[in-house]
Length: 111
Image 1 (cartoon, rainbow, N blue to C red):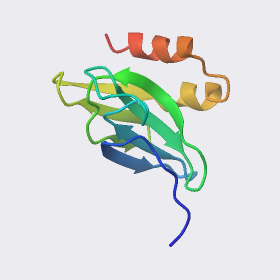
Image 2 (cartoon, helix red, strand yellow; image 1 turned 45 degrees about the vertical axis):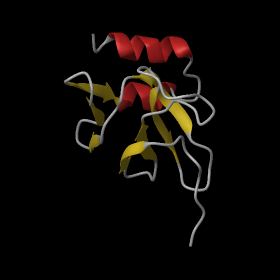
Image 3 (cartoon, helix red, strand yellow; image 1 turned 180 degrees about the horizontal axis):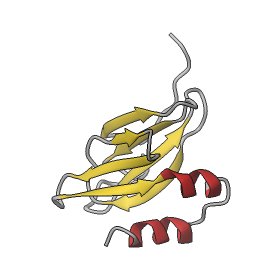
């Protein structure tokens, strides 16, 4: 069996892009935090390496979808009756320096 990477629990969805990056939706933001109504997260990374947070503190992200043509991540919000679309082009450009501010800006686009 190959290497694996521990990710926050209560995983609901997983997608892999053409470069080998995995995107995972979880109902918890951090393995040390209790589950609350705003504790979900979307994480990304490669197997065998540490996963990083793409979006944090969202309410119950369900199974996710990745549109390779538009480079967008679709996240159904299980308890909110909505689907959020996260454009990954900007994320791919900014991911090494993304701060909470850029994640907050991404969240604002869906309200």
